[in-house]
Image (cartoon, rainbow, N blue to C red; front, side, top):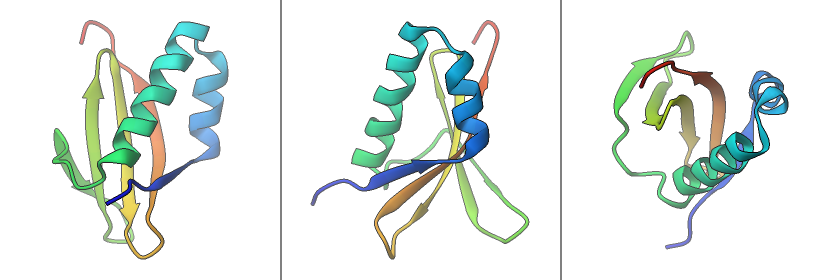
Length: 86
C-alpha cells in the first residue's frame, strides 16, 4: 500500500521559512516519513476542537502535529514546534 500525500498549514510554512537549510531538509524528510506510514503510532495523541484525533511525534528537537484524512489519503501537518534540549 502506497503512502499518503501531505499538506501543511500556513503556520508550518512560517516556521519552515525561518529554519536553517539543514533543518528544512530534516523537516521535509519527516513530513515524507509520516505520510509514507500514516498508521504508525504517534508519540502522543490529543483531540482538537472539531473532535479529530491529532497525532504528535517528536523528531530530534521538533514536535510535529498532524491528522490523517483517510478518505482522501492525505496527512494534514498543522504544527511544527522547535523543542530545546529534546
